[in-house]
Length: 158
Image (tube, rainbow, N blue to C red; front, side, top):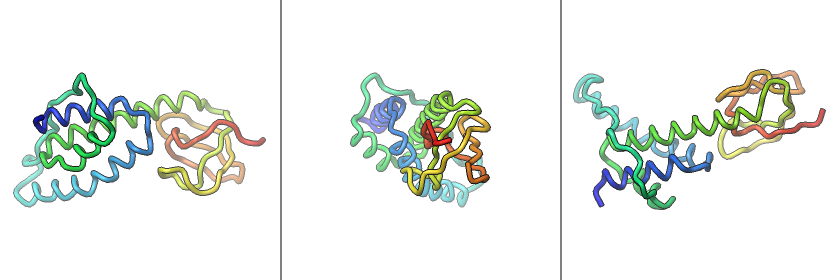
């Protein structure tokens, strides 16, 4: 299988994944390598030397989780790597938008102290003030919490 075919299969896996912690972890894992690659291109010239994402769509047959992660980790072609990470980012955004639909303003929720994946820290009760890919929650203690909708959970003691 060619790197382009592996990329297409990995893209399909990520486009179909509902595993938010895996998606976020995948981007976090790829970020330092992408940063180094961009720095290498910039050393050779200006921003114009940085390749655009490859024009590759998801394949009909998706990779397994292990295959997709292996493709993400081993891809050295910057344009293909961008195509994979762009698909991951778009999937995260789609999931956040879908999650925010469950949280209209005025709804009671609990959110984690830490705004990162995986969920960690104590649970903080509050009320949604603004909904979207980022929620704004007025906490019962008077503070404001802003973070991804996918970290919030419906219901909080009144």
